[in-house]
Image (cartoon, rainbow, N blue to C red; front, side, top):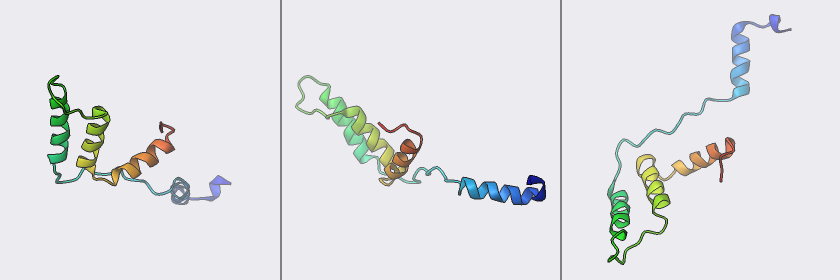
Length: 90
């Protein structure tokens, strides 16, 4: 019966069943904005009708670049694991 266990034992069992608490990735302490700036500039330049520049799928490209700039290239593994886990995968 549950009364046979101490509160500490019950908490330990809950922790074991829930698994270790996974930390949300932290933003990099330093990052290089050059690539992000270049993509944004390419997008803006491409809006000029006289321009030959055009960034294919600009929203997705800029979004991905911003995420990688702030969190590093490895962030996608964590993001994909979370979106699959939560059923939010496209």
